[in-house]
Image 1 (cartoon, rainbow, N blue to C red):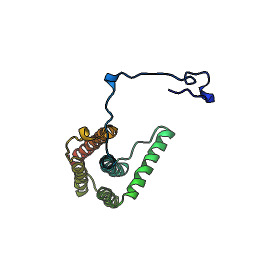
Image 2: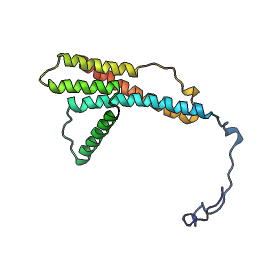
Image 3: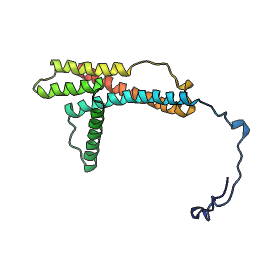
Image 4: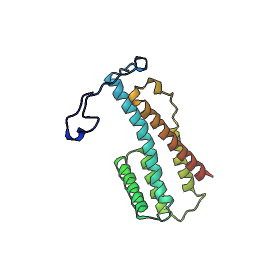
Length: 180
């Protein structure tokens, strides 16, 4: 490793050049991936994340309206909630043509017109079906592709599946609760 003559390096171990070695039995073969496949992996993972995020945003639109949170204890908590609401509303506006966002906003519009309706009414059944539809969208089964992904995208793929699993858990719990 070459030494650094810059001011920040003077008097440190970075000032002098150093030698190092790597054990030959621990050197892994560098996996090669062609650029088209690499881009396809990234777009596939992006698709999984987009579907999960759409479901989360649609859920949060309803959550803010239907389950008013208790007054936050601190100014930081209030600011965090306002930031989250802003993020959700901006994303919903950008993706207004998405079927889940449309379904959530139309459900809220109906709910706001008829707030006098109570549990057990038709709106409750529509809300339960809304969560069931999002759950079905997230439940799409696929074989585990992590063995086929490049090392670079492997962790991102596993993280995307974990987020999707968490979204699925939320939708299932909400659907069950509303459906009872």
